[in-house]
Amino acid sequence: MTITSYSVQSFVDEQRKFFASGVTKSYDFRLQQLKKLKEAIALRQDKILEALHQDLGKPNLEGCFELAVISEISYAIKNLKKWMKPKRVSAGIENFPACAKIHSEPLGVVLIIGPWNYPFTLMISPLIGAIASGNCAMLKPSEIAPHTSALLTELIRDIFPPEYICIQEGGVELAQELLATKFDHIFFTGGTKIGQIVMEAAAKQLTPVTLELGGKSPCIVDKETNLKITAKRITWGKFINAGQTCIAPDYILVHQAIKQELIQEIKQCIHDFFGDSPAQSPDFARIINHKQFDRLEQLLDSGNIIVGGKTDRENKYIAPTVLDNVTLNSPVMAEEIFGPIMPILEYTTLDEAIKIVNSKPKPLALYFFSTNSDNKKRILHETSSGGLCFNETIMQVGVKDLPFGGVGDSGIGAYHGKTSFDTFSHQKAVLSRFFWGDLDWRYAPYSEKMVNFFKKMYTK
Image (cartoon, rainbow, N blue to C red):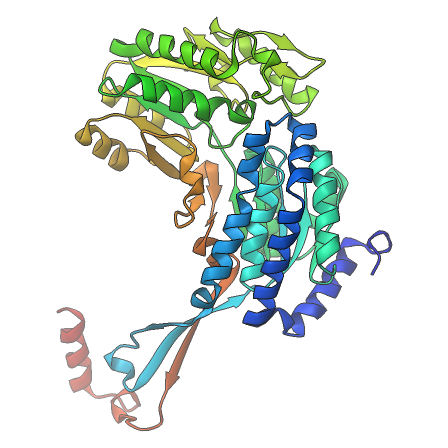
């Protein structure tokens, strides 16, 4: 097949034929494909870092965070046989003698649509799960990160035939064509508004979805905390990738007793990280495009700028910025910021902070800095979020055995590690009965004695 001569439906038809052959289902095939993917990425590390720098101005160390998918592939390779093994469960006394198992089987042909903020990781990471679980996959990288998109296309086409793993570059028209095509699962990472469009299109096809969205992830700072380390971890988590991270701390809720101290510590951290002129720092990324730049620049008027605020549209630069005197009704609090702007609000009691968090849609992440165990328990049990971090930011995403995903408006479903394998698998329930030991009590005519027996048994 040549990429230019086929429509999306033609590619999907070819992938369905390939999947129907059964080739993708064996352990050896899946293992071989994961190894090929790992080797191809390892050989292109420098090219990947360069593409990320061209698209987002990412410093090489932040680019290396995206190369962590190599270790994610290694983890899948190590655990694949165990993940594929059927899980035995109790068949119950009523089915004796019998055997009950859960078999993980591939879904078929899946669609993966990637975002622009982490354009390499968030394309490859779900692909690992799709390959490990035995599917064929159609990939659409984000056209907003063109250098990474081109590199991904070259990588995928170099190692996989399109009837197995197919990648297509394009914008809105391609996305519309893809969403009008029947897939067995859609995995989408991006904003909430586009997520709604994806889900609406999937509903017409009765296609299950995984939606990795975002939202305003709050960061609550208790008065009982280590201020220096708290400030360092918040500042780092907020400003990596110039704030263009779906789980970045979106806004800070700090106890009024320590607000000014925290602000001073954050100021110092910004200076320590990026120097007197962050615009000259090699360690601070850029905004992806002018559309996002213009949106973010308008948000700078939402409060008093106490750090940063400088902008350079030509170079898509917005300085690491801290806003004070922000209210819940300020424009910067109306939507996910997705940029290097940090609003700081204060609270007087933990009840108030929890009420503020719960008044907004459920976030993808929630961060709480405190040394108070009772307060941590309250945050755990009285709030809802996709993930929760105590005394840290961002790092939860690197724990392979923790599922990553949202709840409510921040997403549907999860992935990473074994969860990725499960996301792209159907858990088939299999009951096997034997012919011996067949009892007559369940067959008509029914006995009133057995009715009474079961009524008593079920109420015990």
